Image (cartoon, rainbow, N blue to C red; front, side, top):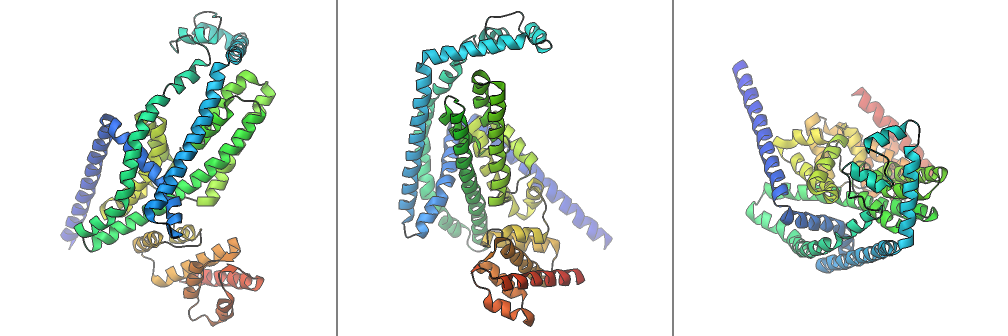
Length: 473
């Protein structure tokens, strides 16, 4: 008996080692492909990212009797219109600053004056003079002595950024072709998989597809909504303080909002640099505080309340992925990396051998009750969420009766927080109240919509009852 157990443990260990080694090999091949096939893969992944951006709107149109292809075409035309309009306004604003020689000279003069004042500060000044090997006349010449830049003016950076627009337009044509074919393939792929692997494989693919759509759609909707809100307020703040290119920096705020944790902070650097040149110290501090409060409000409060843990990825893992993708593909890599890596994690979750890796990549290891509360936060339980809950129940060895109590308790708590009931939540409460005649009046009154005070009291009593039963068991 002992030999059989030892043999089983040995085989299990060998399978884990094989899984880890195979994953490492695939990861290495993928990274090499990303480096050496950048010109091919970058347009494809950009198109895939745009597809996920268009999908929530296209799905909504499809549910309202629009043909699928017409829904995507409508969203694509709307997307192109918004991008073109924003790019034209940003270009016009930047071009106006470049052509304004007086404004450029004002920037350069003020920057050089503040640089000279900084070099005369008692503690910092001597160190700066020693570092730049002398006392240059301007910031540009001092930076050149350090091997940074070519000694040009402060506005040369803007011109260098605008010079990249031509290359972006060339890439956009390739992206458009990829996007069109992805839209067509997305609806044909499930049918081909079903023909190739009939039976259980098709069901597993449908579950993975459902979880990917739920997770990425939520991420895109929430990030886009919070990005728009944050960018609008940032634009108003910068406009009030007279920061040039305020629309350009607002667009940057929106785009970098897709980069977790550090994206919004990076977006504040350009306007703060201009603020250092143009504003007094007091006004600069006020503007900095307003921009930071805006970011924290949208990023750490509204976004969390809106979506919770939509992707459930460890912050350390996210930062590592973001840093690596920036080294690989720059800002674009940082934006694309998170949703693409979330897709990889969802696939790993649904393969038995790689599920431990997915758990290690997660933000947390929730209890079954926490998982139910997260799943019911929006009032609906999708097939993908139900599959994850079933797998967690199986892993933790929780009985069906306890799951019924947990689901009813979580549904009641969600209704109490929101003050309104939804159909899925009512079904779980009904299931948990089987053979509980004392709650029959509540079940008769409980309907989708706003709940009454009596119903609220009964739901609180139900939560307490279910908690006591779970503790007794």
